[in-house]
Length: 284
Image 1 (cartoon, rainbow, N blue to C red):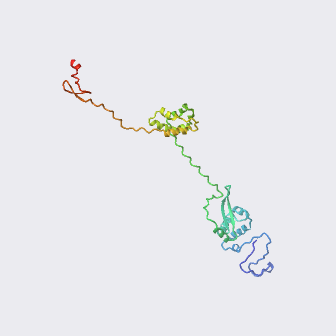
Image 2: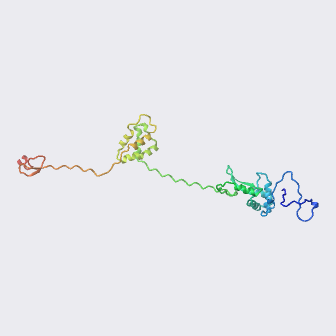
Image 3: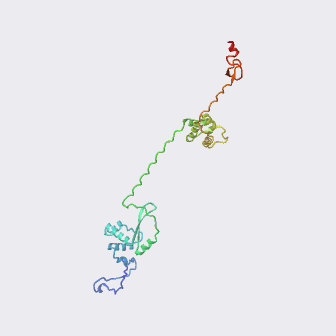
């Protein structure tokens, strides 16, 4: 029931037996309880349909927390779901109703409905709402959300380049010189490229092994791989520079001498006779 508040001055009220003349007559009694006050702006709205006006009065009379979805209202009234849905849209358009989608902490999506008995109250509430980021699109209630596409498979890691067998053998055998130099397999493959660089620079494996195993500290080696990495880096020899071979020193020719016998010139370390004038050759 609604409390009548006519905009025109009220006339003398007459009972049903005392009605005279055509037109509407009211029999108004005071409601002591269970009543709802509805404004004439709703009851006499010129743009709302009768279904929308009646639905608005019904909604304003319900307690908070009542279910007023389309299906719930269609079970209560003879109007079908299409007419009820259209009436709800009318009330939203004219500011008597506001419906929003909200996601509960459990992930469930529910509809929150706010009923305004005065449309200006709805307008004021919208004026003071801070702008928010656009909500994520909500799938229709009768459809299941599309499953997220599976993540793209990670590209297979590139196979590591095989280590130099000579370098790995050298590093693995260090434990025979000192048990403290026992290395894990991953440390062997990590240090092998540095050993290969030593070998490529002309250092024999025995010299590399000597550089890694001599003058080790007496204290227990907690991190032998770190010690070997430090030595391979800090003691690495420079690369051999290939250049032209040095010129061999050529023997200087013997000085020229004058033969004392025939006075011919010959080369010799000291003055004297030439080969033909020597005593042994002359006797021959």
